[in-house]
Image (cartoon, rainbow, N blue to C red; front, side, top):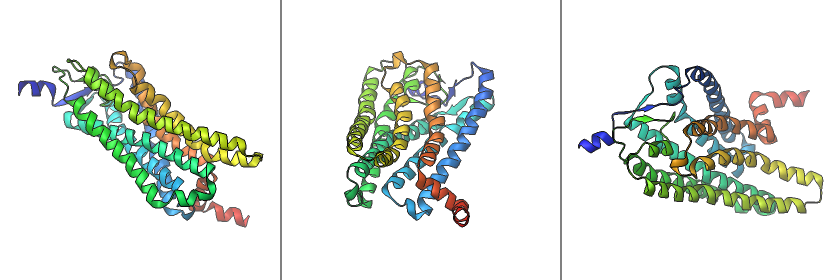
Length: 314
């Protein structure tokens, strides 16, 4: 019982950026703005993909799922972060920390696989356009999304208990602004080699395997695009994939650096800002990337706002 009480405190202290009080005020305003953009942008994508018949396609079904993931992913972190930045109270309950870690890992892992699923969708659209409707039928789309969610839950249910059961010898200060796995592992006062090995193995499975599939898909897409003789055809194919490729680059570029390194080489200050980028900034940028680069989404926005009709009459 004594060990349990020491290992599982009533609350954790999220140190965050408390060593930089002036920076906390700036970060509060910065994060609040990006969180509002995330809420508005991703909610708009979800509503548009449901309401506009032109967007009832596999691509927008996956995009709606991505927006839902980003919305939940950010919401699981940002309210607590804003609360901690606003005042002197930096605590989070033990159960709140566990819940945040579970949700964060489920959604983050699911997004890794979902981005690979979206790259397969783009491969079929560019390389096998005549068979696209037959291959990407609604049942397959549901199955692919279900696989992504199952992978996310599996990763969380394996790694979260191992992380939270580590003995921390009364330590309750998390040198981060959220309950993140590397920061919680770094707090432990026991040998964490086995947990790190599991984390690395699952990281390879859920990061590098989907990324490899994405690179293979885009390699085949690139080869197909080069065979297109007309400049207009190449441009259309490029526009079909450029938005997704930009999102993949932003997401994977930061998260791979974060999770595929040993905990003892983990730089907390660097890690905080990288985590801030892919948990706050990236989810707010994704809707802009898809909206600005996609004429179907722009058309749906104009139709929803009543601009499309006015433009036609003009």
